[in-house]
Image (cartoon, rainbow, N blue to C red; front, side, top):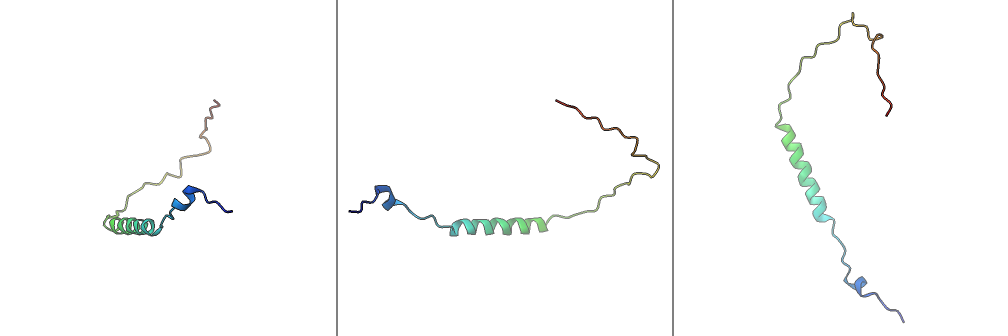
Length: 63
């Protein structure tokens, strides 16, 4: 005789379709909202050649 567990009959499968829909909506939102941002160029000054990086000492701390 085969007996089933009472909770096994009530177990429902979770549908992934709503989750996939939400992921695609979020992806679409972020792709469209990033297109509205205006990117601009920043001027960065480079380090001069006379600056010697060999003389920089790194301090290490042991805790």
